[in-house]
Image (tube, rainbow, N blue to C red; front, top):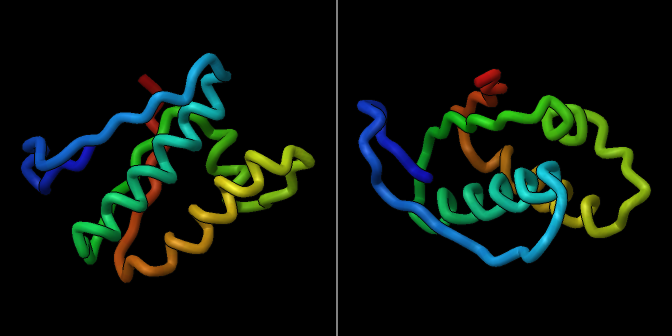
Length: 92
């Protein structure tokens, strides 16, 4: 979900990923959200995830699962395209 600085909804997305793990669903959401931000030409983003494991994967990227690696690689490639970014781990 894309919200502005007043937290008003701007745009959203959905994807059918079938039956999967929470971690994989979060990674898909991050990847698709970044892709949407790119297509909207957003210059600054604050990304909120609720899995510290995703932050660890982005920092380390060492994962033997090729499918997860593909998704993480996309995120790591796209993140530097935003001059201002902040990654928040939501603990709710």
